[in-house]
Amino acid sequence: MGRSQDAWTLRARAFWQARQERAADGALTGYLLDESPPSIGRHRFEGEWGQALAWLRQRGVGRGACLDVGCGTGAWLRALAPEFEKVEGWDYAPAMIKASRRTLQRAGVRHARLRVGQVTQRHGRAVFDFIFVGGVLMYTPEPALAPLLKSLARLLKPGGLLLLRESTVRGETWLREGLALRPGVLGAGPGLDYVAVYRSRQALGTALEGAGLTLEKSRPNRHYKLSDLSEDWLRRFDALSGGRVSRDPALAERVAAWIFKARFLLCYPEYFVRQTLGLAPWKIQNHWFLVRR
Ligand SMILES: C[S@@+](CC[C@H](N)C(=O)[O-])C[C@H]1O[C@@H](n2cnc3c(N)ncnc32)[C@H](O)[C@@H]1O
Image (cartoon, rainbow, N blue to C red; front, side):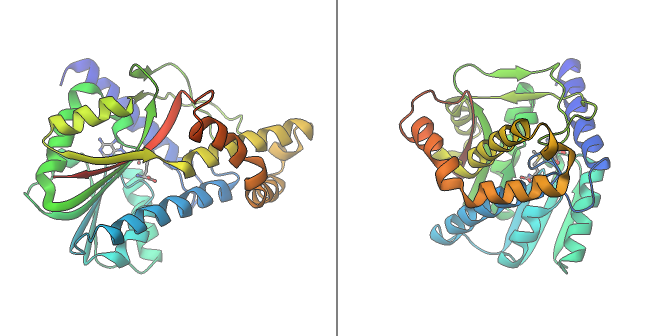
């Protein structure tokens, strides 16, 4: 990998390390990049987990070993643990592995192995029945993409399932640089240097096939967009209240809970028009990719 790509990866890793170091204990950092209001991240997670579990059951995935690449704070590992004999999580940010360890300890999970590093360093062949990769390829620069996917192909058992959850762009690949990211949905804290690469659904499909993997299907991640739409409503209510919502985390949480209850009225109509009917589609989306070896 070239030096500029190495530097790019280091910037992405520094972002996640700093993000977790500043996060509140138990926050779903890396999920929505926010701690407030937490219910938006929680609802998104619950929706996504329900979807992933349904696929695990429908596809008859073996329940031996499971790998979570870019495991972040361990929310997915905690949910996956009861489903498998062994679970393993890798993350290149030490603060994230520390958070994962805490999450699993609190949940009483004893059959987990955690490692700081890149999964390309993981030895072995046909080790895992199930591999989950959530929001990781978007921090993987182009020269590092094929080696990462080839490692996943090597580690996945024949007949195993690789589930990707990845942000996507309509059209050309978009390299996001120089746009700081502020903590919190309503956050006005200091921005952190942030880099990401958004690829189209087609580009990701081609990269997967190039690594010898078979893309079984891809589909939009509804829960991601619904959390985005909830955030939009929260900002509207904040503006209407003259900034009261953003000044008061407890109020923000109550408003977020109310938005969730009213989601069929507030969020679903826009989702239906833009996603299902395809009118004024979003530039940035999020998709699931179900992949086989
Ligand atoms: C968007 S967060 C997603 C966290 C978790 N997968 C989830 O869905 O909640 C991305 C995480 O992946 C980690 N990460 C990104 N690229 C990585 C790589 N190449 N190797 C290991 N970890 C990586 C980051 O440190 C961060 O914790």
